[in-house]
Image 1 (cartoon, rainbow, N blue to C red):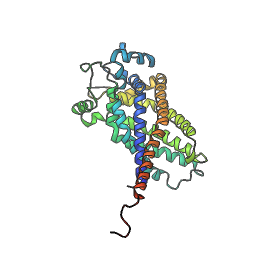
Image 2 (image 1 turned 90 degrees about the vertical axis):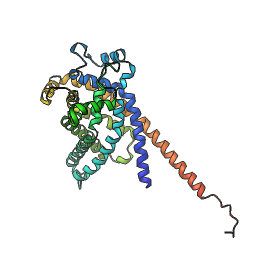
Image 3 (image 1 turned 180 degrees about the horizontal axis):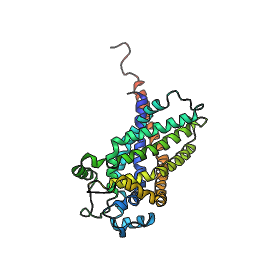
Image 4 (image 1 turned 60 degrees about the horizontal axis):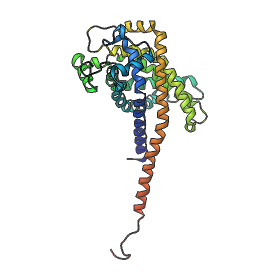
Length: 319
């Protein structure tokens, strides 16, 4: 295995560990966001018991479900990270060759921008095909507000997937997929398109200061999240209908979301908060983890060279 492949694997693993820690740290914020999104579609939450906002949700969750319930659905979210990132960047490079082949970013700015939008959106949509059941399970587990095992709809990740598959088949695990594809294309297109375009316009993209890269990522992520948030709300409400008879159509849900557009974007502030915490933690953890793995690799090479250079104990001239 070449040094380049080993280096990539170590960086990928370090990024995964950093992301797992970061996602676990911001999981309470993520669960609050999900509950506010899907409470109108949840059969466990009546009109009288709906959460009034972010603060009300944060206060009531530990009282009604226990403090540890803030992390419901987090395991599926952590597991989902590894294949999602690997697929996103693998497909993004392939799609870049298709959409950006022969494009001069300095002379053909708008074509370069459109190519980045297309490659980012296509990569996100393609990778979603493989990881959607995990995202579905994460949503259903986070939306489960029962306190004890008897009151809960699902007991865990495996139980959630098995129950939905038994009642609705594979289709049940992909309910809301079409809306998800639309939303992910918009989100990934905005993220990869704007981020790659902004980086490409810098004088020296490879040597950009980490603070500048972080500020670009903050702005792009917040903007992409706000634009795609209504789609995210509709798809998660559609996920809540799996395993049940009847339910609202996609058109009905979009109508409700449009009617509640202002309040939905106010709730999106919760999404922006959790993204900022995630990026800050990732920014702090990733360099430390990569430096540790590289230090171990350097130490290993040094010890190997020391063994190779160790003087022989044989007497000269003897076999």
